Length: 370
Image (cartoon, rainbow, N blue to C red; front, side, top):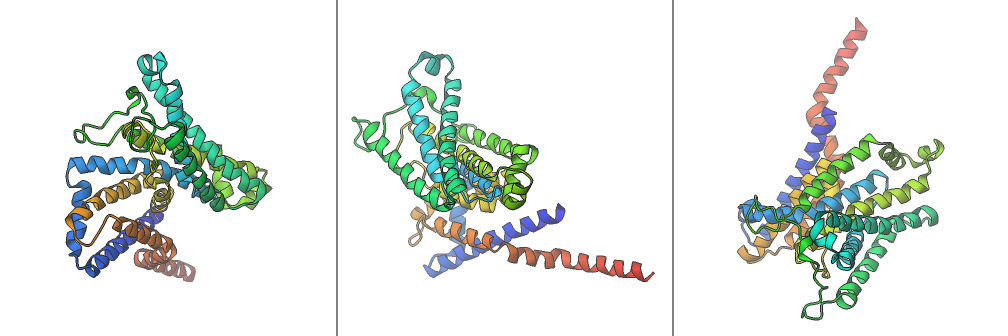
């Protein structure tokens, strides 16, 4: 366990250094001071408490989508559809809030309970959307990557219909939906900074990561899900219904991604808008890879990428040749570096453990000689 932990830290450290190196090289190519660029990224993300709040706001949906992709990975599936599941979840959350949010119990008596119902509806909708892709994979043999990508486009179309036609606010010049009741607004985390966008959805994401870890490692469900990911043929031979587990895995993945838009919807104006997800579903893939598909790793990598997104905004203002798109390059470099996992691990083995292994082998030879 200690060896695995050290190697994991080594892989992440090398990947981050690789990302910083590429950032510095690109900055130098466009005639910007690499140290100043890195400094701007740092100050823009965590330079003051107000920026910290925005970094946490950016990180919140990434926790949900990162957990979604991670669960599917553990089951041997590649969930590219966290984006669409998040979008469908936001639509379901809005419709429940719109149609049932005017009852007294929802706005006066127990608004917190109704908000929980809205979040559960988002989770259920996202789960059903994910299970649809899982069923096509399990019973028709279509690859889940293709299915989830196509379902993302369908989800975008549904959101567009709701925003620009079905629920459009006629009094607004911008294409956006009607406004939900203000009783459903999530509270800001004002202990970080007054007026920050960070909100209580962050707490929900952290709690959900703990639930994720518990179910994955401490329950029969989690064992079966990991089993089909590690060895589907063996799982089939010992009596596990692999098709059922595939559908269930995609349902759980979708259910984790469904409430990801809660932070943007219930704290960002209480309206549905196109582009509400800001690509969080796709960035969740990078989160899952960086976090090694573990709950703690997902939370930490979400915080890192959320801070990176916030810091990139300052690049538009404080540099002449670099835009916020630099963060996309950095994320891509990190993913490429993490894809070289076996190379870095081999280096780590030689660097940290080769001498120890050599000594142990020498001691065994000496014992046999005696």
